[in-house]
Amino acid sequence: MLATMPPTFSLQAAQASVSGASGDVQSLAQAHGRLLIRGQLHGHGGRAVVRIPLSLAANTRSFVVQAGGESASHVTVSLSAPELMARRMPLRGQASLAMGLARNHGREFFTLNQPLHSILEIIFEDIPSGQTRNFSLALSMRDLGY
Image (cartoon, rainbow, N blue to C red; front, side):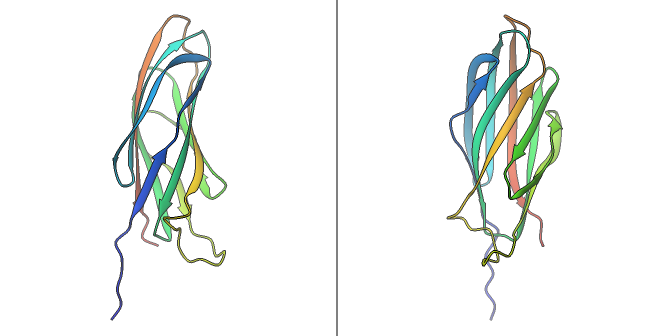
């Protein structure tokens, strides 16, 4: 008899850093493999960047990180880590942000006790001095099935 485990995911955020603006960024864990990020930035004139360290973990051979968000201006988001294939995308609607595929380094799967460390970067191209921008971003992980 063969026993299989359901896919399990973990997505955790550390403290965000903001450059080019001031404001507040909150990361709220919603469930396993789901994270909601909300923020309000006050512009100093020009580009603003929010960086959030993330830990991703799964018990599957492959997974995708999806992002869905809302923002009032030209905003892009990306997720970077050596183990991920990722792209920069506009922060609007729902899209796949990054994909992880297990490599054969002596282990068959990603492991929940050895998370992938990555950086989520949200770039606001222009926030005029004195103006405020609100944003929200929902991240989720799912199994790719191979």
